[in-house]
Image 1 (cartoon, rainbow, N blue to C red):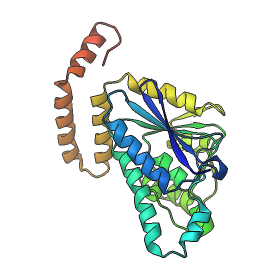
Image 2 (image 1 turned 90 degrees about the vertical axis):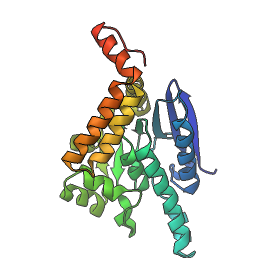
Image 3 (image 1 turned 180 degrees about the vertical axis):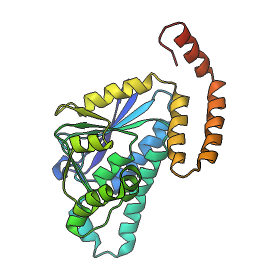
Image 4 (image 1 turned 135 degrees about the vertical axis):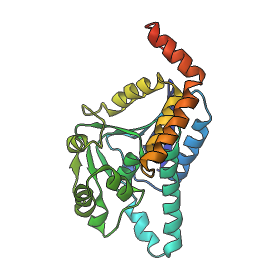
Length: 258
């Protein structure tokens, strides 16, 4: 059965499901392109305020399809470069996407599957979930921005351990390290992610877009430059209709209607 990315709506949340169960939801170029297209379409839809990415069944994703990678070794470098460009385009799209993206993880998230999780803004994982940067185990180095994400999120020694050893890591350890936001009971990651998404859906969309942009830019900015960017966003959002509604709702002790 060919891999596909299933798209379903849950209120104001779009759920994208990696579906390749015969190969443990292994990732391949068709999924990368579908993921990028789905986000580009949803970006322009006012009905979509958040996105959840999950895997079909009891596994998030085993990462790259090793049989396909083995076959590509005989095709020359260009074929794999094009495949990686498609994956990296999807990763960059998630990072730059102006709405919150949540990963809902059951079972294993390995290799590029783990990199995909790290590209998301928030992570909800089952307590039984396992994460592995398994590249070194098969003689490979990371892709999908994995080394960048871990180097920015963790002390160097911890990032080196995850990438060099490639051993599976429990969701609870990643929760302690701050890479997983919320833990759920086995089988409950998607439900918990949708509950988190609903919380975000109740926030002002323009404010969340600004927050995501500020977080992205903070990695590259000096404090002085970043203060200027915060001023720009704050003033723009203060004069947005949503700020008027949000402040009024707070003062009137009622839920805001954005």
